[in-house]
Amino acid sequence: MGCGTSFVKYVLFFFNLLVALLGLAVIGIGVAFQLNWTVVKDELKTHMTVAPWAFIVVGAIMFVIAFFGCCGAIRESHCMVVTYAIFLLVIIIVQVVIAVLLFAYGDTIKDGLVNSVNVLFDKRGSSDVDKATESVINNLQQQFSCCGKNGPHEYAALTLPDSCCTKVSTIGNVFGGKCTLEAANEGCAPAIGKFYEKWNKPIAGAAIGIACIEVVGALFALCLANSIRNMDRRSRY
Image 1: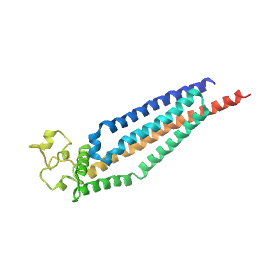
Image 2 (image 1 turned 60 degrees about the vertical axis):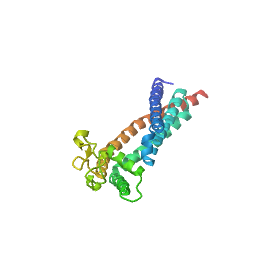
Image 3 (image 1 turned 120 degrees about the horizontal axis):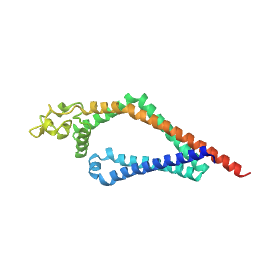
């Protein structure tokens, strides 16, 4: 194996070793959330129970792909390196598709998020509203510094939930220990729409950027696989 091939081999190994460690870290975050943050999960019910499992699944996929890359490179296994390259190409395609969808259907996705928020707040006005829905709404208002579906006036009350006053300090938001219309945040539907607009293109751009790096990794893997195959052929003669 030449110097160039050896360089590719060790670059591929250390690159995937870092990815494997990152995958384990992502799994650890998901497991920690699943085991320790029971209060948050109980409040948000199905809205957040998928989050820790998403971390665990993504971390596991990262670890498995990196495992094939590390083992294939260090053991000079043609089959494992090719498998790694195929996995990486699939991930690249998925990332590019997601990025294109975010760019092309950004407004549609935004409208879907806003409609989901509207449905959630419409439940609050119905007779079958429960404590779980109220907990979800309060958490949403705290996380996104918002109040009501389109504004605090929808509460039709002089005193609002404390979750409506989170933008600045407690002293500035609360008069006499109570959240008022004057100090309340903007509506949740426009706030979440702005949040999505802020992060839509950066996330899509990051996906494209990571995909470009992964393309280099896939090319390195294919070059190494070709070199290993040629070595196997020469060893037979």
